Image (tube, rainbow, N blue to C red; front, side):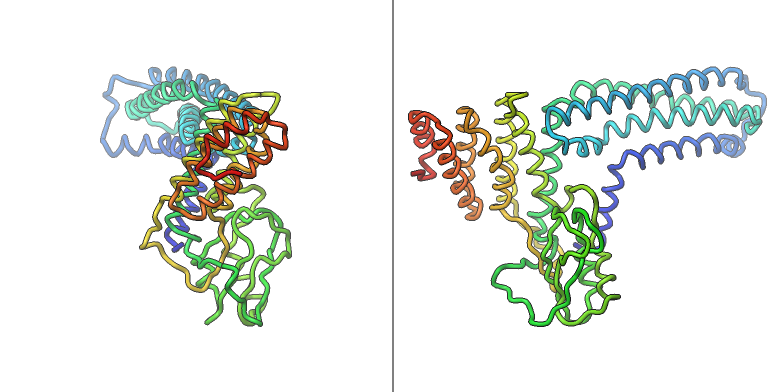
Length: 419
């Protein structure tokens, strides 16, 4: 991963933050209120215009009072929808829904309109606006009103799906797909694969984690840049691992002083939560949890569980068939372990396999999906799918599934050569 891609990744992380977007809209609104007199002077309007502030202030007053109520009400709707999604899908989906750009943009327009109208009224009462600036203020106010109307229409349309189980599943699918494709197109994000065949040098310096938390991001280009001459780093931790402060997360060949280790640690980002950018497995876990929640006695929704299985099947198939980008940057002196198809199959279906033995319909669709994945040209994916299918049949037999149902499952999935 080069510096440009890394900066893009960091930008997208902040771009998806609601607080940043609301702040930018609010600052833009304040800038619009302050710019009105200067725009008026630039355009050369004089006092001969028939429009004055007695016509503008009622509109600003209505806008300020209305947008305060609309913003508060919309925020409460968003919170309620996210709580409902967390209860019916999985708590992990809450953080994905918080990154919904439609909700963020709509709420930002509402709050920005409130800030603009309130600021304009305050500046007018303070005498900041000359009389001839009323036309410019009215023009900007008209633009703000149009933006509010369009946002209201957009918000009404968005509310038809916000917080629904299908919407949550599609949001989780989108984040999982983005992470998987990023890893498929840029394997190891530029790092060399650390396999069992690689023997570490006899003399290495351990790299200790500076804090506890989830390892979220690794800047491979920064690691390469900060490495001493002719040194190599071998990483034991991957994004998504929970690390304790002082735990060894890698080894550096040769002798490196404490200052050099601290410099290298700038390439690692830790946090309290797992994130999706470099943790492709986490996206599959979230989708799998939605299927698991649907199988719980409280919901008893096998249809959603089957839908989650189909989503996972499509994601794994897309990942296995995605070709690496030949122009992706490669970091020669960084070796790391990243999950492959075997770990992804385990993260996707293992828990569902353990919980679905009481539902023949879900069990059948799970085995059918694994049978499809077993036909993949990716050997690792095919082996992992076959192995998990055999484990699933064994679990179903131990759970007391009738012999006739077991026979039907084996017959329908004969491609797996199940015993």
